[in-house]
Amino acid sequence: MVTVLLSAGWAHRGQKTFACHEGTVRDVIREFVESYPHYRRRLLDDDGEPLTYYNVYLDGDLVKATDRSRVAAPADSTVAIVPPLAGG
Amino acid sequence: MTSMGDLHTTGPTAPPAHAKMVRIPGGTFLQGSPERTLDWLEAEGQAFPRDWFTDETPQRPVTLRDYLIDRYPVTVAEFADFVARTGYVTSAERAGGSMVYSDYWEIREGACWHRPAGYGSGVRNRGEHPVVHISYPDAEAYATWAGKRLPTESEWERAATGRAYRLWPWGDTWDPTRANTAEWTGGSLRGLDEWRQWWSRIHNAQGPVPQTTPVGAFSPHGDSPDGCADMTGNVYEWTSTTAHLYAPETRCDPTIHLVMGRFRAIRGGSWMNFRYQVRCAERLYGDPTGWSNFALGFRCADDPPESGAEHHGR
Image 1 (cartoon, rainbow over the protein chains, first blue to last red):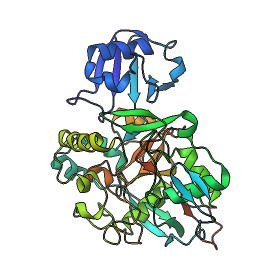
Image 2 (cartoon, rainbow over the protein chains, first blue to last red):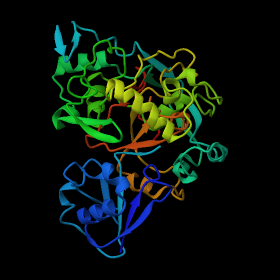
Image 3 (spheres, rainbow over the protein chains, first blue to last red):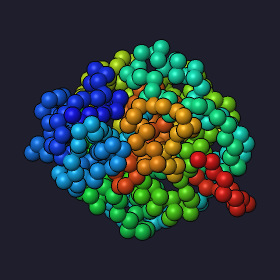
Image 4 (cartoon, rainbow over the protein chains, first blue to last red):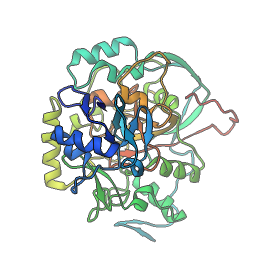
């Protein structure tokens, strides 16, 4: 499984980590939103594609928006989603 | 006369470079928050856990030389003058939009410094408001043009807090009438649900119009000990400092660790925030690659004329 990690600023009811299946980073994000539709508005555009303004890190390495359909998130990896204004 | 959106600038308007700057005397101050502040934050019942704030710790002494810092954030009129003289095009204008808050953050087409709520909006009668939709490259470009630079995070915090630690520029007792925050605009807001209701009322009536106020509107009661205005609320402000932990052993929210070495420190909170996010030692971090939003601006700093030293702290 892949762990999706959110910041405390986004956490709904305090939950910051979520389990998803392996796949491309784009697929992981889409599965996450399907499982937790509360986050759909934040993460997907009107066409259901992942928005590009937030940063995504795979095991700590930045995955550019243009690479999210190509880069695979393997088992036991962590996909972190970080908004452009972090902390606070 | 130059027309920029619905704002008109006439002739040279830039003040002498240091006319609106405050000289902060050199010395040592305590940057960051003591543990007792984190204890207080936990006890307040605000929305975030303790490790959301541990990046403010440990509090440690930082020594700075004399420096100058703008008394106010850069205004719409000042930025308009810069654009009129240089033809500068901001990141938001090149991208075709910038971020505003509706029921959540979204990229609003056409939103930029002279259309803060997107197409159909403007900056008429907002010349003295702080400019918003400013990316890090935009802020650097303006500062360079003005013969100044962005403040470091240490310089910003010292200018806000004075020589001694305090929660807000005026002291340790919260007073919603001293700064432009959501608690001034919206009254007593208890939690995020009431914040959303407050913003929804404004958004439904006006659209995503920044609730900024003219710079200095809360002076002198909201000023820092050295006379800097709007250090609490109004707009988030860029600093030149790359995000870093005050001590390598500090552990905070995992996503905050990810922006260390990547984002730039942002200070002061904004009109959108509660009292907790507008404290002198509060740290935020912004993506410096061209992102901006409708609550994000900046002020400038400089070295005193007789200074040739590079010692600004981090």
